[in-house]
Image (cartoon, rainbow, N blue to C red):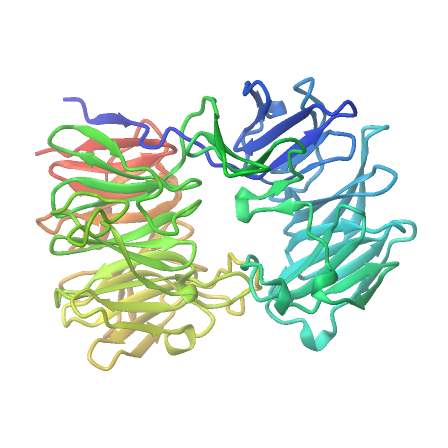
Length: 613
């Protein structure tokens, strides 16, 4: 019997990771769009697309790009900085300049002399690249605490300005000639948020520190704008602030613009189109974006009440279903999930025929009726969207867990907060009434985030936490917790620290009232909350590392789990995990049990394991 089956690539697309318009000295233009592992050069006149892989086998995600005044293109991916000639379609320079774990090229700027400045996450380091010498010069750390140098600009005098955040917003002026740095935001105003700077077309530099988050909708009339010059900030009326050379938001940002009869309205690799609009009139034009890829990485899976397996890709989000009877993959694209974009559905819970999915970014909860067709838009008053958005909580900006309560009405979901925050919320949503209750971290476990949930025999909820802060803040705790939420009062009435861990990635409550759990270090444990006693603990790191949603039950209540290198079954009576198999590929996300198969993701591909009878 063949135990493993590969079912294909549900989302054979990539995400746009910003773009730029490069203009040569003779006026020729190219649109360069970044993607994971490659860039796509588009000639807006001939519509020809040229795909060029990153040098040195680099397949990392880029975060921002830049078109210089000379028409060259600059980007970073992982630790590698790259200079590219879009007219010759060749790389001029590629060099690993970052430390391990550093992401080079979070922001860019160009001096009047042609030096290209760029900054790196998470150490807020600044670099300079001299094109004539093809040399990168490290210039030091802009801030010792903040991680996100998301904006960069250079004034006429050569001062470099950086907008940083997210735990304490800042706006830094740096003078390359002597390394002098000046923090332009008053100490009392350095609260959660992001500083913003940019260069206008005339070379003047402007900034503000009004953003309360890493990304925020532009409402310029609300901001206290500053003209930045010579290391100083001078207030200026918002009406006198010219536009930035960047347009668009998030990974749809565009540096510079076409100069002729057409303007770029949107670049979208996920939809494989470059959308143009006429400078005069209302005509539009679509350029097909032709490229090859291995597909988008898959996020956690879930079995629906209809027996099918559901999931999304991430970066970009495409919603899909594997139809187990027909053994067929169906992709519904990205538009079916409201505000989906480059996010993903991170965790699921089933209440009868309803499948609830918690989404990043924004902490959105989507509800799908598995009895009805998937619909991206309402066709008439009797045909609503399916799935539909029912709740949103930025306090759960990055969901990690979801649970259906046995009362048949409630879905709970928890996760990490937004940028610069410490401690995530827990949402209790009633799918019948629409009642929506949010418990903040200080009502659950202060400064920690709920990342796994289970229901005990009495209907009370157990949750487990993470101390991590993926939005850029510094953790305030050192050890993850297990807690009990009294269901009737909606209050926490027990908190424990059962094992040494930064995260407890999943938990399961057995019929004896004990809690089985897994830490981020692949340590399996069993804890009795009534006796407040650790019953068992074992190291499963030889089986690999934890994956998101690494636990699932079949209809009979048998619990299956996965680490990156193993599929196992929990034996609650023996307080142990029993390895069933080692997969032929690394498991990257789990886990759904449908029929007699365990489904999991490996990169961009959907796989299943045939359970023995």
